[in-house]
Amino acid sequence: MSDHRHVAVKERTVPSVRGSRTARRAGGGAPPAQETLPSGRPPRGKDRTARRIGAGGWASIGLTGLLVLGTLGGYKVYRDTLGEIKTLKIDDKLGDDRPRQTGALNVLLVGSDTREGDNLRYGQKMADAGKRTDTIILMHISPNRDKATLVSFPRDSMVDMPTCKGEKGNIVPARREMINAAYNEGGITCTIATLEKLTDIYIDHFVEVDFTGFKNIVDALGGIRICLKQPVDSKKAKLQLAAGWHNLNGEKALGYVRLRDYGDNSDIQRIKRQQVFLTQVVKKATSGELLTNPVKLQSFISEAAKSVRMDDKLANDQQALIDIAMSAKELTANGVKFITVPWGPDPTDTNRVVWKQPQASELFESIKNDTEVTPTASPTASAKPAVKHEQVRVQVLNGTDKPGLAADVAGKLAAQGFVVTQVGNARPATGNVPTTSVRYAKKDTADGPAYADALAARLSGEKLPGTLGKVKPVSSEKYTPPTGPMTEPPAGPVIQLVIGDDWKGVRVPTKIPDSLKDQVVDVKTNPCQ
Image 1: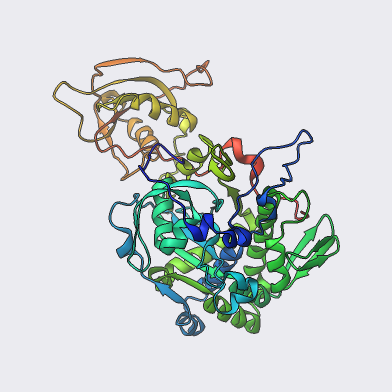
Image 2: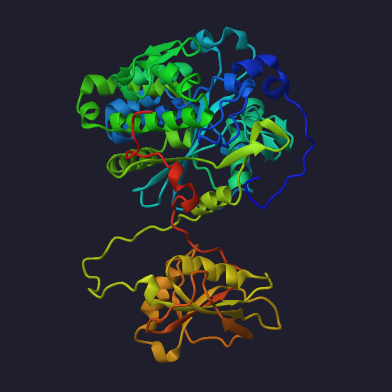
């Protein structure tokens, strides 16, 4: 479970995803349990999970085609190529009960393992098995378009799926099932509905690419360089390579990202190799070598356009494509961050996984509250330095009947450096305070507005102007943060935050929780895996 919401469901088996031996042989098994042996290595596993050949990564590589398309927004080649992209209208199937939108851009990347058409060569026995998501990644680009976090969702995660409307208009009932069943039965619309329900993150767009698309795009890029700690001799992946560096063409790259019988055979290692591979892809796709070579660029764009499917809004939104492209260029220098949703074995079925709490919810909370857009400084703006969080003393008062809200908000503000002095109750006997306000005392008219603005900037929703005059609390008490009291509180006015019925939350900077930092993959990660 990813958060506090539970959906009442009736469990049933979906033959094409769980009960079918064909599906199991083709990749329906789960990653091994996220545990270690006394040696510290993840277990090899002797059940069917060790035999699973998971394909992965081509969804993100399909995205690289999108990145380059975005950089060409004003050119004829973009307009000519756009007509080759397959599109799907999705908004009318997702309904109105969706998470709130922010200034961030969230793109769902899926890799389809369909064996239709040219993909039949990768599994003829699965020709009639439909399609599943071998890769599910959420790419979160910050409102400033200067940071991105790519979150991988294990496809064998057991989750509570909501009732959803499939791509063809069919209704898929709510139940507890593997997350990739949403795609198998309802396509991309059910996958989006399920992830939005579980994470409370609004998904703006989607991009989908299959086996053949992955291979063709890698070839159009001129191959991708990877590094192996050990030699590979895998009949399952049809791959033989010596240890050391290699420039892989599309066919070998597909074998590499599907590789399981290598190293300790664990899914943990395989996922990490895929993520390291994708950092190399982003680096190559946004390199000057590609963007300044008209022949390579035209080939890449053509393959990308033929190999991806996306929502119609993204395909027709030149600015969104440019936003993604521009952010990718910045990220090449700063480092793209990949993280897998924390997971462990499902207590009821060790061949399945569940998301670990509270780590998963902390990760989702960080992403969904990334709503800050840094304003551009005006040439005529005052030279007075901005007020820092640690300079602001705050009294947090709950003006609603929601218990514990003041303490919860105080903790989030303290975590960002604000000095919370008191928490209390400001709800009058007549009922809840209707609107949230940030207040400063009448005696603080000189500095109060600047300190109030510093606090208001960290609150979700429309920025609140500082209000002159404080309210008298019904009750209040001293607040001590988990790190302990400050030895010397800062000078300056005490700002009052009165929480009302319209409260939307505290903006939390998008960052990987400390408990997951050792699992992050970026450009600093050792490329030899």
